[in-house]
Image (cartoon, rainbow over all chains, first blue to last red; front, top):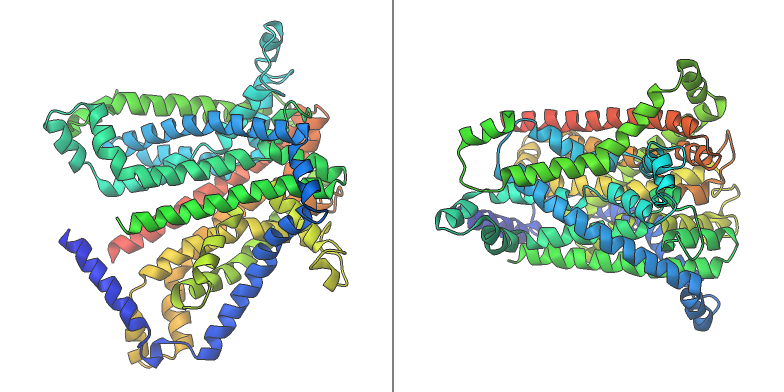
Length: 292
Length: 278
């Protein structure tokens, strides 16, 4: 505790001295403002303008066209499917993330670092390959293709395949947020709780969960943003059946390729709002975590 | 066996080891490892000649060059501008800084297809930005680099930022009091400290860019031999039900990803060791 306060004081001390830093530790004003200008220009060209252009194009034909494009049946079914996929994927990967973080941070065992690398693996793999592997497993020529056909079970080109591909792509998000956080918090609090007679579950809900809630929430929103926005992996396994297996990103692609730009950007603007909300929640969480 | 033995030796009272580790292993195997192993099984069942011809087909080779080249160029652009942005966000105060800091995460939060269509129309010949250029940007390799730069930016900024934040000012003071000017302090003192983070960020962005599909397909134009990226070749082969061909190309990409993952782990290992020695 004392150490923490120490660090805080040091931090605030260094903040209060930034303005009165000796000149040898500061760049000339013109360098500072050149760097700021370069940064702003770069971010404008690569981030702000794309974001603004989405909303500008979406609303270019007026509000009524905008509302019409996001309430037409195909768009609505795409929105619905996107929500269903996210509602299945996010809880499953959250449960996995918590279990993996518990095993990795509360115990010591051989091969731990290798396990962490394996959990991170989906981040390094192309989403197209994430879709491909499920085609190889469940597609018509796939390993289980014949068996599935005989039993009339559809996985690829249907909801289960899209869920599996999205699970693969968003696999590490929650675990990745929780592992470093729980590593830092150690095991003393849990040990105290157990030795005072609490059960494992009670210890988790009363001791661990309150400690990790912000990290968990952060993992959840990142996982959700990716689950809803995933394009490549879902595109491979969806079969692009309009009104049936189209998520919002796939619907955007179809509209765009049909030169229905306004409609494409209207759906894209909904997804951008989701992205902006994700960023805002992220910043609130970071602020909360800092000011506990 | 090994695992339970280790646990007993450690003698912790916290419960749930077998349950959580068991669940982790089963879930990891079912969702990631088993499906991924299909790529290698299907590759093994191909004849060597068939495999070799698929992966060395001129169209495939052109796509490797394009994908690697564009990912590398985008990574370099991000190393320069990402480091400047991280520096500006940590060291300077200016109006709107908080909002800009938050927006750096936009490429993580924005679906790739959305980024793809937005960048394509911006940089198209009649677009807001494209109209100021005499040459085409969208539908050329240049467009691919722009999309990959967009995707990769947060990787560099977010890995460099914490290192810059935690850099103690004593080393800079020492450097200055020994007579170094600001430029020398940066190149000789600050930059070496940032280098591992920059390399990690570059590798992460590069790995992501190699596999990127959503944002690139819109802006690339997808001309065979010219602007066709490797993930698109896999996609095209799948659409033609050429599963073997798709798998062979996927193997090449997977090997590249594993090598990169290894490099990233090495950088972190070397950095940690250096850090621990100090």
